[in-house]
Image 1 (cartoon, one colour):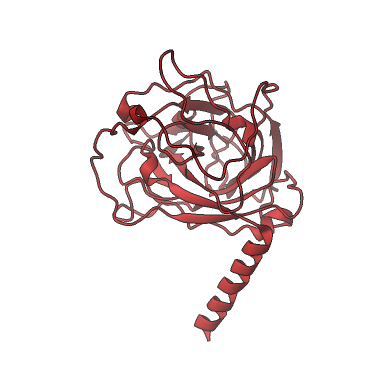
Image 2 (image 1 turned 90 degrees about the horizontal axis):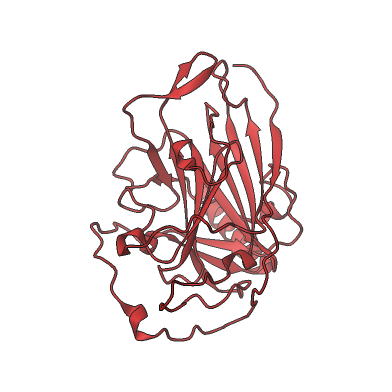
Length: 313
C-alpha cells in the first residue's frame, strides 16, 4: 500500500442570493387545514425498533472547513452510531464504516461525515446528474417533521451535487423537483488516498457541509394546492427535525489503472437509521435530531463519559 498524504479539496457551492425569504420563529406550529391530513399509502414493512436520535450541540466556535472532524467546534459533537444496512440489522453489517456528526449556529446546520473507503472512486462531474450511480453520501431533511415537504442532497468524492425537493413522498405520487438548488450551501471534501487509482489501497473520505437555514424556504406549490411548510428559520433549542443519511456503495473491480462496477451487482445502501425497506423516501423512519445548547451538550457528554468509566471498573 502506498502511503499517500491526505489532502483536502474545498468546494464552495453558493448558487445565488435567496430573495424574499421570511425568517421567523415559531414555538407552536399552526394546525394545518383538513386536506393536509390525508393518509399516505400504507407502509409495506414495519420497524423493529424506533428511529435513532442525535443531540446536535450549538457551535461554541467557528467551523474550519479543513477535513478534520475532531477539533474545534466539531470536538463537542458526538459521532453517530455506525451506519447499518438500509433494511436493518438482519442484513449483513456494512463492509466499511460510515458515521456522522452535527452542530449548528444561527446561520447554518453543519454536517460532518466520515466514510471509510479502500477504493476511492467517482466519475460524475455535472450538477444534478444522478449521483447515486457513483458511490455517494446523501442527506435527507424534513425540517418540520411532517413527513411531507423534504429535501435531498447527494454528493460524490469529486464534489458533484445532486439536489432536489419533494413536496411529498414518491409513494404518494410526488415528482422530485430537480430544479430546486441548495442555495448558499458550502462544503468541503478531504480524500485520504488517491481517487480513481486502483494501484493502491485508500483509507477514507470526509465531508463537511454548511446548510443555511434560508435554504429551507417554502417552495411555491402547484396551483390550487396549499403550502404547509410556512417558513425557514434557525431552530430554537429543544426543536427536533427528521433527518437521515444514506451511503450508496457499488461493488468495484480493477479495470486498468482505475475501476469499473461489477456487472450485475446491485448497489449496497447503508444508512444512519434503518428504513426497513430499500427506499429512503419513507420519512417516518428517519432519525430525530434535537438541537441542544453547547452547555447542555457538554453536560451530557460528561455524564456519558462518567457512565462509561463506571462500567469499565
